[in-house]
Image 1 (spheres, one colour):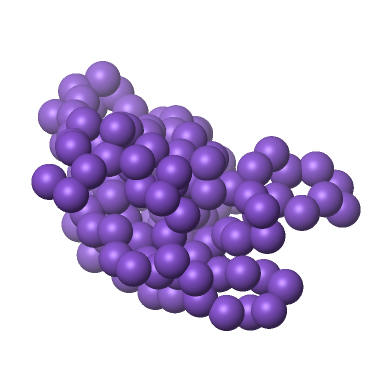
Image 2: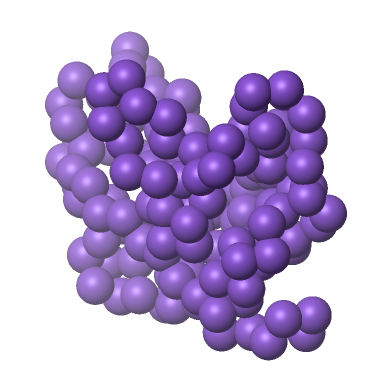
Length: 153
């Protein structure tokens, strides 16, 4: 894989495009982009301890605190057409008091062609009371470590 577009993304998730993802316009439906972003974002949050293992009927938050999506957007660079294997990357560009800003890229797994760029913001929430809470310190440290930055730098 030509990894140039994703070289600075610490979490990269591979997946194939399925024929059924194509729409009437002859390319993968644009809504799929948000599923690819989500897959990379969830993998990232699992790596830094913001979400726990998923099990039927079980709470996947850590200590009752977990992420909730506040915003997401995409810039479509070129249409995705079957057949292709893709990779979706996620990295954190900012950690606020109670929010985490992600950057996303979807590219060809074999050639590195960029199909979509975008981002998202998640807010850390105490699910029992539906209130925003600060990003837990251990999650901040895990993000900085994963990103290869020093805390506060």
